[in-house]
Image 1 (cartoon, chains in turn orange, cyan):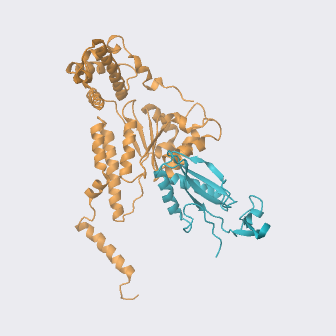
Image 2 (cartoon, each protein chain N blue to C red):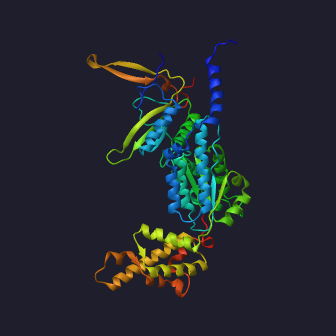
Length: 330
Length: 142
């Protein structure tokens, strides 16, 4: 060994100095990373546009923070393995699982976790083939489309049929597991479905459950949250409630929530759509000149005419997917 | 100097590395051009009909998926020429926008030039790939 400082030893000294320095001064700037990625914008928008769901939002914030910290660590050459971000969203119908998944894709893209940030939403039909040997290529095709983005499998429990062990759904699960494990940096898989059925699904497929790091549960909305959702939906379509209509709608929701097949946000949307129909009918019947206000305002009578108040289940609600109403896919 | 077949968009460049291929593929996808992989062991410049590797790939957003297929094709046809073509379906074009070779056989002896004496001292030229003398499937085996 010579006493002359070779480039290598110099580098080592630098490294030692660097680690000592970190205790004294901050070498990375959290705010610059946050600003650059615009992740706060997305999180704020999430807070603003999605009512309630505090636990879900909390978890998304945690994930976002972890990814920011990971990026900071990488700039200081602290090795980090990319975290596993496969998720399962469970909850009753209409609680915003798909909406959150869409936002998830944007957030992960902003944080450079996925390269493209698009969402491919599929159900059993898109993955399972019709004959032997058809399933694996079909699933791989979908996976290729989702590369660099998020694959959202709605009603994932249909992939597994307990009663039929020769069902091709099992093949899909095998292909999925392989990709979820080996290509973490290329694809994020989100499974969604109703809670009880997802639980049986995970019980019979422990491999799937253990590869999913984040199990997010979406709770039912409270009446206040549902009203807030209604207001956002109306504002989006440039409608408004009259004060009486507001009270009528609350009464409507209270009645509707007791009835079977209530599907949260989706039921609110359906109810509003029907109120718009009745408003249009009322305006036509009235005739004459209409002001801008007339065209925008939904009155109490538009809501009180609903069949919920007279006999029960409203007319269009059959289409709303409740767990027991689901048509079994092929 | 060994023979180096030149065809397509980047014919003036040395062969692209895998990273460069991925970047070019991503460029095509960003332009909304579906991609297609083809292979042949008859790379005569006038042979435009190469065999297709699977179907043209629509609806893909990320280069990784295409690179995966390129590698699959290389595994199956390592000693063939493989090219990637991007199809521009926007109005008024409906044609190949970009096409480049992504795989070459290890050893290609190149073409022979045949001169045919014709009437009045006219000479007709023919390009002939040395390897196409062998039957299909037997070519470019080093």
